[in-house]
Length: 192
Image 1: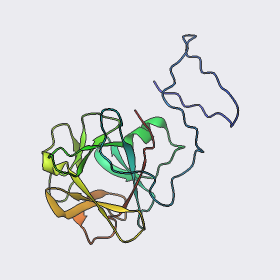
Image 2 (image 1 turned 90 degrees about the vertical axis):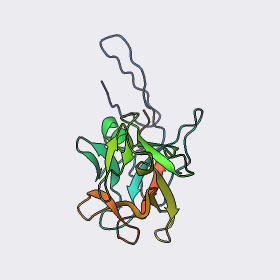
Image 3 (image 1 turned 180 degrees about the horizontal axis):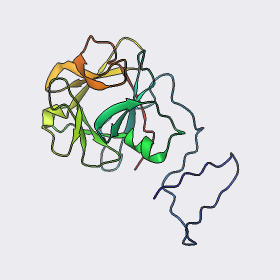
Image 4 (image 1 turned 60 degrees about the vertical axis):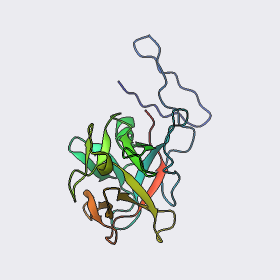
């Protein structure tokens, strides 16, 4: 079960569930806002002692600000921020890990569903999978000229293809010259 409690600055709140006490699973001490502006995270691969959870925010119009997330149908983008429910924010968070194909790139593991990876099963589609083909679940970050601090995530199996979003928010693979292929890497909206 999840509870979400908003506490005014400098105030304290107690959460008592069935008189058994509770476990705090998340504390946020920064202002609860929408992430706007330049990237706030990195795609440094996680280590055992330093996990790196990130969220990917679309950087270009008309879908700027939409967050890449896992849903019941695979992968999509949606408008989401730190005011969204914990489970939604967890669906919009990924762990950057060493590349499944052994290269110097990265793979993205769902924060909500550990052991599930962002993958490209075909030349144009994206999905999440427990058993991906390693080079189709490996992404090579590439800096783009504009907007500043944005990156493309190119598929290791075919670096002419990159993670993209269309005008309706649907996610796919597209040519590196297509609109909607620039992403801001932010610190994760939620940590498991």
